Length: 173
Image (cartoon, rainbow, N blue to C red; front, side, top):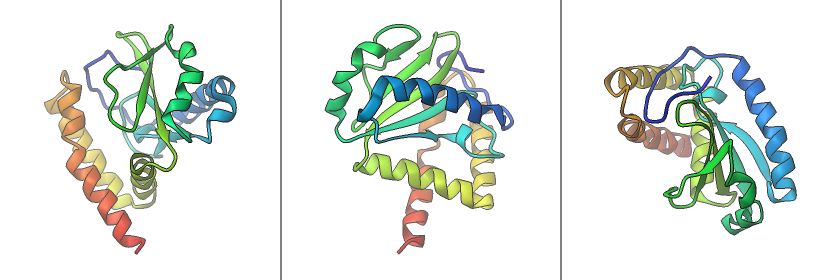
């Protein structure tokens, strides 16, 4: 379980990923307490039968990103680290060493577009086998091409993800 920072390796779906999520969810529930509105398994490891990087993605939704300041101290020491250049509307916490990163914990405001899009994408892929297979093939192709360049691997999926979110939003109209 886990990957060296910057590398990409896609593994066949592992049912144990769900257990690993649940174990970390228990820890996060204790650390966040009432600040966490929801703690959800996201990313490819949350989607049955989808090959994925062996890193568990977890979404902790909060009312305001400012709430994170109340628990920041827990994540400033091993095995956690806070990504200083987290993207807009999200705080990213990493778990594990640079040689073996095992979890990404995404803190987002529950009413944000970023939160909504993340859930919409996950749920659409879970419920549409054709989209799941397309996404899996894309991920495998990109992993071969960018096995030592995770940033490019990740950004190369953006167009597909954007299209799925649009499709999902149009389906719900």
